[in-house]
Image (cartoon, rainbow, N blue to C red; front, top):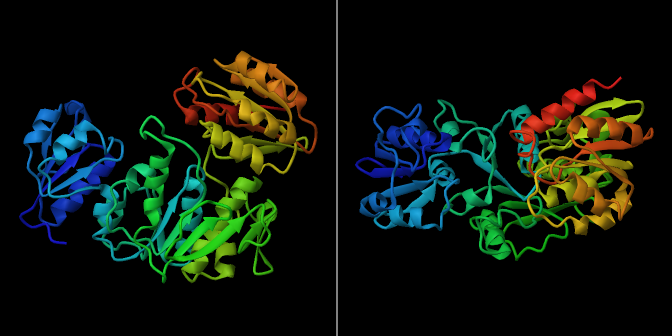
Length: 436
């Protein structure tokens, strides 16, 4: 792909847009950058890029470009993008753009939950195998920044959101990972089917020589690639785990409890997906076990904080939706004392009641929705309502017997009391470490 003499227009002045601008300049293009935000958004823009703050749809309708690169944070199907696309030769995103200049192999990872942990696991294994494996895309480094490196890695672990997948055309992962699917981002998509269709685009350029790693039981259309399955429910899957060990071809490939900080069935699924993907890349079992020795998941994702008096404390503050909370509960192999709550988002938590009866000893609710959530959850298990996270931790400790797990998995956003899930999770970590 040659860009000499081409005009590349970039819509969105964020980090991925800046990385795409640098790559376009390197390839000889003339580059302009447009954003509805003011001049303050145009920080560290590469020299030579013509910037256009406070960009309007009227300006977009007058713009002529050979290629329009759209930030994943901007609605691809909205009127704003449509105006800029009117006289554009092609409309793609930064990930697709970077892929056209990348010579290595791509492991592409998608799913409603678990993408980031799996992306990290894949990257860690590939790096240990000497393949580079830089985590990038929706997590880590923008893909274009990786391509701009003097010596790009031989392989990348590429997390792909539905927003990024909307604008791919030729991107070709030699291995894809499909972790799971549940309704999400309904403020962006008109239907669940359209959200799912965006996710399914990850498979569109694969052929029979490629591999698709799929959670067993997912309802997917026929795929061109070779399918490898993983499961915590179906022992007949290619990879199987009981939440403690991972078995493949009759052999134990990983002892999660002994070798890693990974806990629960959900993290077992993430680990199996990563192992299966890297086996398809030719990485040996020994190398993979060595790579994952001592690994702990990223902060705020079923993160083991400590074990005190025989009770594990897990930080799953990243669980800002119902599906993530449900996944966290399903993943637990020990009795649970659940800490949940936060901002009122008008969500219906009633479908969680059967799972609470199965997995939880008790619940503690806090924050804006503490009282209504306690009223509902008390239909399933004993539940106490408190005001703050500090109160919730103290109460959960008093309720948790030896051999149980206290898990912060809020099931909603944090903006009633915190600036984001990270601050909420950090506060939980501090509170747990203060317990004596």
